[in-house]
Length: 83
Image 1: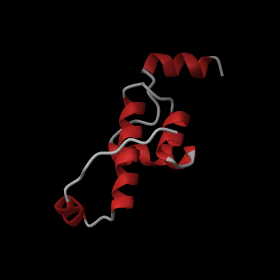
Image 2 (image 1 turned 30 degrees about the horizontal axis):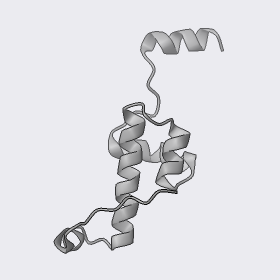
Image 3 (image 1 turned 135 degrees about the vertical axis):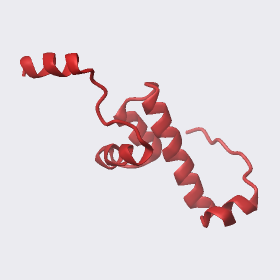
Image 4 (image 1 turned 90 degrees about the vertical axis):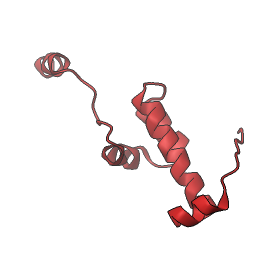
C-alpha cells in the first residue's frame, strides 16, 4: 500500500470542524467520487479506494451530484429491450 501525504493548515481543520482523520476520510471519498465520475475507477474500485462498502458508495453519489447510472436514453431503451 502506498501512502500519500500533504500538509493542511490547522485553520482549515478548525473551519471545517473536523479532526485530521475525519478530513482524510472526506478527502479520500471526494477523490474516489471524482475518479469514478471521470471514468478512471469503477464504482467497486472507487468504493474500495474510499474504504467503504459499494452500496454505501453508490448511495453517496447523489451527495456529490454524480448520477448513479450513466446511460443515455437510447442505451437504457436498448438495455430494457434485451432484459
